[in-house]
Each structure stands twice: as structure tokens, then as C-alpha cells.
Length: 86
Image (cartoon, rainbow, N blue to C red):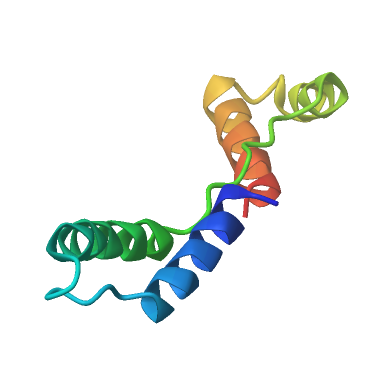
């Protein structure tokens, strides 16, 4: 189970287990402090692992653009990385 799933389950549980302030003021204060932090953490999209180019992909791009200069070569690499990391 990943961290996001754990946080989602914790939030769902905590939403059902709100402590009564009169019975447990310390518990309520801790609960009230953690709820917005947990909600905010779940708003941020889960990070994806960066995918780079393989040596073969690098060579293919280089061969295609080696005579046109570094600018086009750089743009081709950038485009290839963007397409792999959508």
C-alpha cells in the first residue's frame, strides 16, 4: 500500500472519529491540528517517477540531428523526454 492510500484511509477514519472537546480537549486539539495538514497533503498530486531516455534512444536522436547542430539536437531530446513523462 502506498503512502497516499494510507493517508486517505487515515483521513476517512479521523473524519468518523472526531473527539468530543468537552470529554477530551487535548485529543480534540490534536485532531483539529492534523486534519487540515492531512487534507492539504492529499490535494497535492502523487509524484511520478521521472523517466529518462535509454542509451539507444539517445543515439537514435543524435544520429537524426547530428548534422543540424546542437539546438535541434537539444530540442529533440527535450521533446522525447516530455512525451515519456506525460
